[in-house]
Image 1 (cartoon, rainbow, N blue to C red):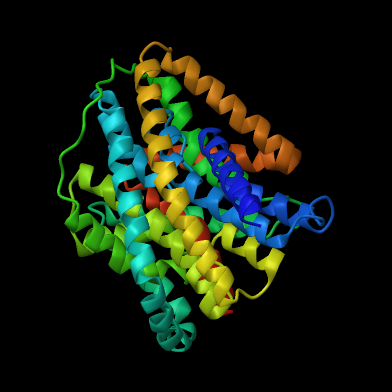
Image 2 (cartoon, one colour; image 1 turned 120 degrees about the vertical axis):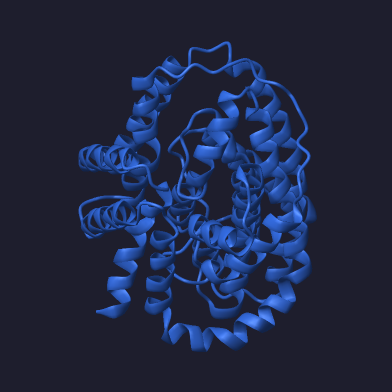
Length: 395
């Protein structure tokens, strides 16, 4: 069994790396496919191997997802906040440094997660019954925090409501397969790419530099905010990062560390939540739940070991890939690269969500461009998930 676990560990890391580098291919999409295949084509495979594969894939994807976010301007729902500081560093020739900063946050958070996992189990089991009664009000409070921290509060409110209205309609389209793909791709991916093409952004020669930064402050903010967002519906890494930044005010470089740490904490705590309250708040955790059911202690410990090993391996893979991209990106016409990336997003959306998905992608992209033009944080567009969730719990 040990050889099988190691094999699926490395296969999962490879799959997570590939998914992280391809625009529009989110870990949730792969998880849904695995759930479908697990009852047919994969039925002969030991479910534990599939759990190992999904866990390692999720962690590798969390590390490597920041590379297209920084170098291509094409984030997913977990990395959309890295676009602004990441792109700013990229335009200064410091794209490698931007990715390394997120990597530092990810790897240190991996170590901390292992240390606090079992104390967190005890804490969540005590406070969740109370939190469950006030979930919609917590979500409303978080939404207000996101809006009130903006300088242009009315514009932020408008973005939040507009994206929320769009999200509510799209998520209630029964004919649409994987509605989050065209919705989030349009709001956070293709909208940014179209603006990059329009503005004809040129990427300067990149420098390979090692950043020197205080990591204590961003890690403190990530550690406090992430557990709350990891087991409440509709909240994810973006919201946790904003709350974490309010707790520990960071500059642009420290914010990238905070975001990397937040993504790992949220992913890790989603498995902890699955173990404690039998609710997965990420696609990977839901897939594990569907494949193996209720986690017992042995499986939970195995997942923690997989997170630890795959985190270390993914750290070095991400550093290597960041160096490679830094050496190549200045030699490529960025407008052409953005056009190719946009084309890939359209093709992936069509293959997964069909013609209706293309229509949703177009509407979401137009909405995203309009919201960006208002010059508020793009995390306000996460109203597309928060408002539908609040409505479900209130009504």
